[in-house]
Length: 272
Picture 1 (cartoon, rainbow, N blue to C red):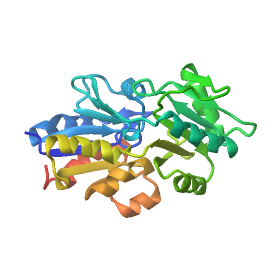
Picture 2: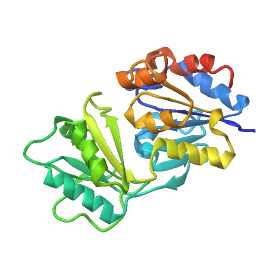
Picture 3: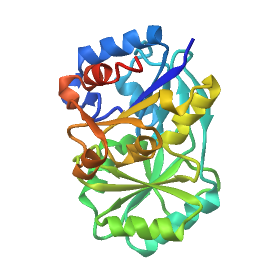
């Protein structure tokens, strides 16, 4: 029955923090199963954060969350897969960040990865302060050693992309993902996960389960943390508010406010 996949990012792609969803996009999602599509939202949000804006009846089949660290069956409301950093990996990363005076959060294992420890320094990154203020009820200051357990990710608030590249070079066994802050839409976030984690990995896991070939997978995104899945599949699109370098690399669909999925549906008619 299902022989195709649509995987779409959430914030800034089909969801606006100010305006919510465009009803035309919701209607497209409702129509896709009869066209043979598995519907996937692939987001950087934690499960708890995604559930704030997606009701249990939202017309999707799966949620790939925390940039691919978790996969959730939306219809059955159950966790399908989770992938974590071990204590040693997380501890090595935060040690490096502490040495360089970089503010960070380190997040509990799924499904509780909205809970986090944090460490701050004299020169506080303004987006780090905003993050703490927005998520104050979930955070605990890290005093002393990191507790011995697995973690979903380490999130660092950085000023320069070159630091991200340094971490990639020094921690080759860890997946380092760049994201644009969803708080101020401009600050650079560096997310460190288990090396298998990415939105592309989560989407491919579902494709393998259904026996769906790459040419029947289409993805829509808007930011750097979508690039793994954008680059993996040939039918890839970005919305008009994506960074300029992504706009040059991928076909462009309407802005989040102007029904990007409806635009995608029309452009993707040969597969639909």
